[in-house]
Image 1: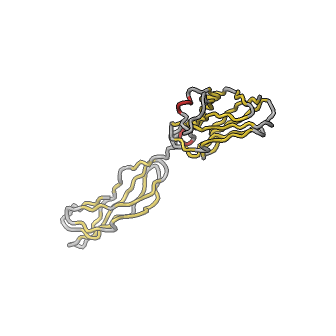
Image 2 (image 1 turned 45 degrees about the vertical axis):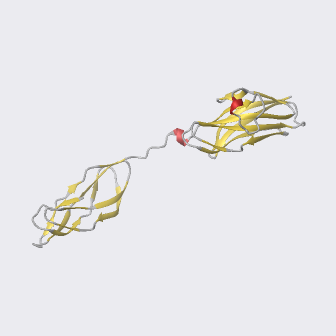
Image 3 (image 1 turned 180 degrees about the horizontal axis):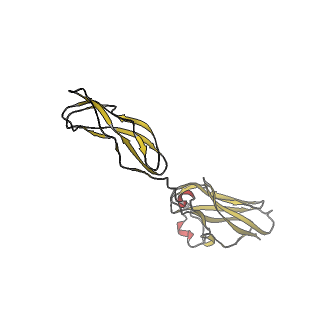
Length: 235
């Protein structure tokens, strides 16, 4: 509130009134104010008083009030007429878009590399030359295994707008005698990026020949975000 002294004498102890709220919404308060609590305003001068309120629901609010004081020379009470402020618009809380609330972390590919994994673990050069078991979520159902060790590469894609922590690949419904090591066990994947994992599949001699449906899971700290099913064929 700005109070102007248009008279010919100083007005002392100018104090604003309590404010009346109007509009389509509400506000709680004042939390602070008025500040200052009062002011002496010279002839032709002005003073500004401020308040802080907490906004309510979406809509508009306005504030009506006046100010009064005492003439420094005359001792008379001087008061302004009540005036209303402009409308203040309170915006509603917009929900976060779904691609942030529900990040698109997907199991993108499982790859049979065409050659050995380099000692330094740099797998970029051999990824695109391998055979895809799953690509972009489209299932190619069969992975043939036999006794011993087979290495495949797994990739998890973060299609969302936030970095995902503890992103990993898990395997469920493995038959007894088959174990899968994952390196790294988990990692951070930045937005719109892909994380790669070296998966070491060990098949022991006691695993019976046959077909086994295996669930492959891409998960993060938020939980399971994608699943696929592949078929292990033990021969």
